[in-house]
Image (cartoon, rainbow, N blue to C red; front, side, top):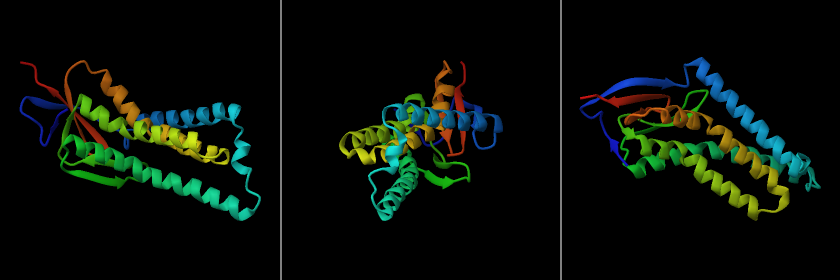
Length: 195
């Protein structure tokens, strides 16, 4: 694992990926996220009907509490998703993190750091892996009436990682060593200069 706090000598910025301003890529990523969310909901509905989300609440107040937990949990998850990126970056040696919201995406990035392939893939996919495991554990331990609440959080986790997965797949095609400077919105890719 390597994190460099500035672009090392012998490396040149060659590519830029901007999911915020590249409308075609943004549409692709958001379209994939929507398809994944719909598929996850539809497939699970075949095993546990979504109507169970609305059952088990004899009183309106119980129902409203569960819906509040569902929506509140989704908002908390968005913060935890970015915090997981940040904690992973910090654990790998990043120094200058920044967090924000662009109106389209929440983000965690770095102002100066460059990540090698393994480190960048690890930081990009860490929320998907960590929260996927947490939500799976909750599915196995909570009572059945909470199934769809946790499953909707899991859908948010998986579909919300569409941009992270897209970047990992995009960069996986590079057959040369690379470094990534991810400012949270734009990924700048540096390649090693050939001797």
